[in-house]
Image (cartoon, rainbow, N blue to C red; front, side, top):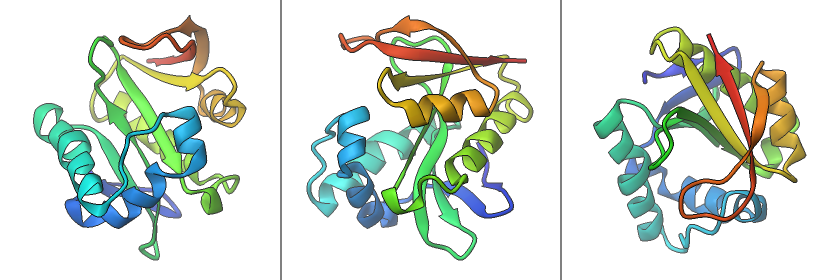
Length: 168
C-alpha cells in the first residue's frame, strides 16, 4: 500500500516517530469505547504498538493502517487496510482525533483507501467492522458505498459488530 493523497490529506506509512500522536489517538475515549483499550500509556508503549501493529503489517502484507495528515503536515487520524487474524477479507479501518471529526476528512481518507484497495491492489472484496452503536462510522461506511451485510463477531470477541462490505 503506497502513500495516498487527496485534496486535503496525505496518507503515509507510520514510523516510530509517530508515537506521540498514537499515544493521543489510542487514548481518546471514543477509541477506547468503540475499538478497545490497547493499554498504550507511554511513548514506549506507543512505539511498541507501531512496531508490532502497522509497521509489522507493512512488512508482512504490504498494507496496513496509514497516518492521515493534513497537507499542512499535522497528523489527524489513521486509515488503511488491514489483515486480521481469523478474518478472510481485508478490512478497512479508520480513527480520527475528536477535533478533526465531522469535517469530511475520514470520508475523504476512507474513500481514497477503498479506491486504492480495489484499483491498485486488485482486491475484489473489502470489509469493515463497526460497533452497532457507532452510528457515525456506519454512516461513513454507507457514504463511501459499502453496504451492511450482517452482524458478526471477531475471533476471540463476543461483541456483536456490524459487517459492511464493498465488492468490485
